[in-house]
Length: 398
Ligand code: FEO
Image 1: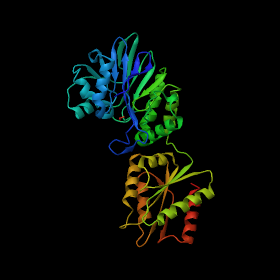
Image 2: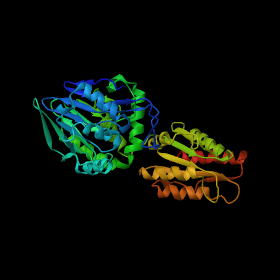
Image 3: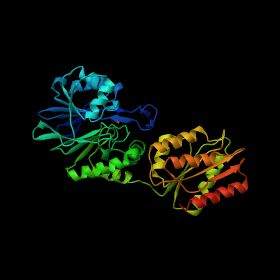
């Protein structure tokens, strides 16, 4: 059974769903080690507005719970900040009860909602600066947020209470019964916010930089940011905007991440020796090693996001690289990382093309490949291991 509504502020309530069991999101594309929430908000002024709904599997629960809180017929407006089904998935169940109520959304959201649900609901298209009066001197102001992260995305600002309903932006996949950012573990909050940015918003960093400037220029008083995943930012809500400004600015830390796959551990040995070399030459650099076959892809993307350089390793197989390595570089390409350096390494038995292939893939993915890489024939003996340490020492200079 859904939790009862939770007070956000004055006449604003959370009426969403906490999903403690969620392990994968976007199909199997995003790991959610700490679950998630689908946040929906009910604003009960003279007019009553519902902002977003929840993911489809929880639609019936959502509607039943909402009906216990309020006569559904009394809802005046539905705001659909975004068409993706983790927020719109309960619309069909809800609209069965109130089929004629207006749904305020962007023109692109009409396309996405119609495309997914094939319903001709009472769509009311809005654009940046449009307003909707709620009575009691309060109104909603709409702000288009195209490509953050879909073309249909928007945010909605509530005057008077000074709450920005930001939808996906500033969210985290973090299940919690607590509502506010100051009530949860701060390490969990930071790590999940960072992972969320790295894995969902990185490709749109350039768009985000412009949008943050635009939002800041509006000079709207901001007391809370009510996201659609995770907590409501009420304690210094500007902190997450400042973090987004840093993360959107081709973010990197003093970190080098080594990511490899291996067949008979030769490439694994090289990975560890390269890491040792980096640490010997530059103890201040954070070095992390991940075996692609054993680690979570999204966690590794987060580490790449934080890195100034990535070192990718693969043995040679069938004149190329292991598919895990090719797939991971292809994934990195989609994130459009900027300003990151890279290098390659790997063991081989016969023809030895892997390092060259990795270099080509990394260059194509937008990384600056800093050298020809290091490759070793057969399992690395002491001299080869020492050479890998030296290779690491060289990489420490980048
Ligand atoms: Fe883009 Fe949370 O959906």
